[in-house]
Structures are given as structure tokens and as C-alpha cells.
Image (tube, rainbow, N blue to C red; front, side, top):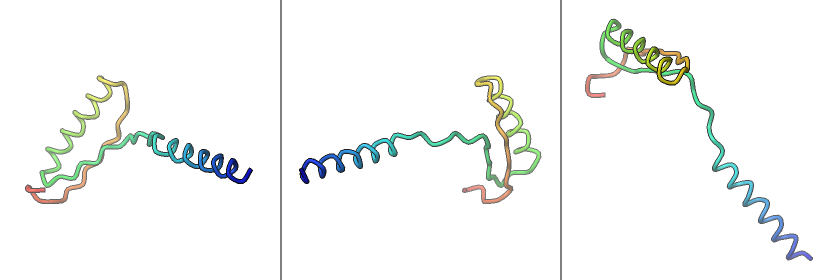
Length: 73
């Protein structure tokens, strides 16, 4: 009886672990662009990306730019 109970507990724990692995993470709705280019350039790019996502997939994407980094990054 103890062996059957051990097998049952092991099966339940294994199935729980498998279900956790295959769970899909929520899709984020914000695109953050870290770039060293000027505000004029990245604002135009983010606007175009948001418009493309709206036309192509009918989703609203929030965009945000962080002016940081180097040209190499």
C-alpha cells in the first residue's frame, strides 16, 4: 500500500511539474527600445512599429525609448 501511495504521489508531482513547464507566459504589450540615437529617430521608429503592429496583427503596442548605450551596444 505504501508503494502504491508513493507511486501515486510521484506521478502527481511529475504531472504538476510538466504542466508548469508548458504554461505560456503572458504576452507583454510594451516595446522598450534602448538606443543611443537621437530622440527624433527613435520616436519615428517606435511610431512606425506601433502602427505596423496595429495594421498587421490588430494589437495595440505601447512603446517606450531609453536614450542610453553606445553605438556598439
